[in-house]
Image: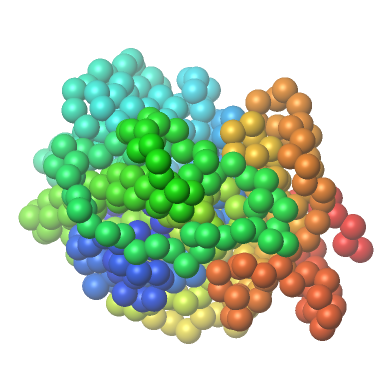
Length: 482
């Protein structure tokens, strides 16, 4: 048995915390799906209730997870940026240097060419871009670089799981005394939500509860009103695998889209839950589960009809909050209320393995909190967030930045010529403006109270804290805050 703990890091794509029944049991929305294998991680380990991403879009979040840096620092601000694989500030490189065997299987989504292929991994097989749900191709390689392509038959979640299991079995046979860092990165439940054969009929005939904000009219929030991610207006036939029946009323049409979208999304989630059960059962069968830090998370949250939407991108709660479930040696069973982010993942895992974080990492280790210690007196009291893809030609989300404290959220929406396609700014008609929410009185973020009587001192204090965070993380503001 290795002296240092192993790490199994499972990352899904767009898996909202409120689509995990362990989070529903903690008060995060009504239960939509039973996820027994994910719940088991929470039953013996940690469920982080205030884990947030710092940029709610796939590629940037993945860059932050690996580097422990905010997206403007690691150079991955948008979907069209790539991670520079020559940089040393990446968790897998530090673990490999410390004697870990490393691997990654599934979705990479951090670039398209050899200059951004995975580095620091002894073995890897990753999807080109988003990859396909059925019969996907994988790029395969090792520590020396890309070796070619692997064309497969089957369902992507199952194939990715099988690759992870096969590698774990080879590792156990050939390197029993060496710790491992094995990453299993699922494509699911990313759009267009194509479930596997075993989950295809799950929830058939079940009436799903409506989110409280399904009928949001976006009053006082121009950026929300301009966004194109409404379940009844912006989903495509390939997303819901049908056209709505003729003769539906406006309300009936929206509910039809909501039901079709969400059930396929949840079916994909069920496949991911099954995968986690397979991986942890294997580790248990070889006596390594209790010596392995098991992490389950997603690259950000997702709107499940919340505010009438699908997708993510916004600083609003359902996109901002990430699921984070962990078990392992020294990790105490608990619900963690401390505020943590994806930038904190890398330094925390290194700390749990007895290793120093890279000096360029911006995140902080919360290993002591996982072990049951009190939150450090100087622990972060706010999360800094910045979404860079202004008016991205598809969802028309306005670039913005802001902060979230335990009780409030302040954000600034601005028009930025930085554009996903590089072809220029798309005018959504949104002029720069601020939003302020009292998360205690208004947890659904329906009422923008910025500028309302009695909020001046609060706003001033939050703007000061926002500027402090921008200075701390070396980001450049564009607003008028002095």
